Length: 91
Figure 1 (tube, rainbow, N blue to C red):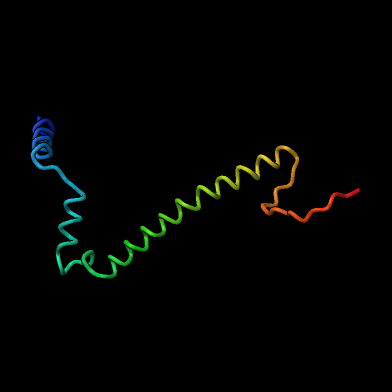
Figure 2 (figure 1 turned 135 degrees about the vertical axis):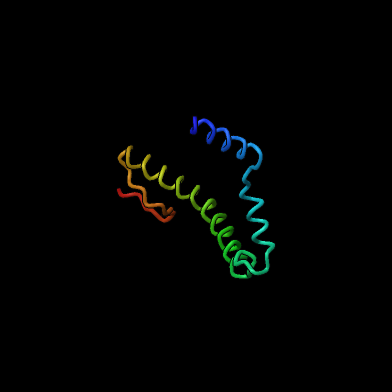
């Protein structure tokens, strides 16, 4: 009986108040005394956004390079990744 009462209390408390991470984050960033409102955190956020952008840009290219290398390997070819326009045919 006690566990049922405790469960009902927890359920009613959870239904009445909902936790929001974004609201808490905004509150902490608005507080001038908190570390999340400082210039160091803003700098870190900017660097992280730039890093993610670079990672997304080059991750696709890396995947394409790896895919081409694997395809060449499966066909028995050597993938160097360099174009050699000055090749001379061996006669």
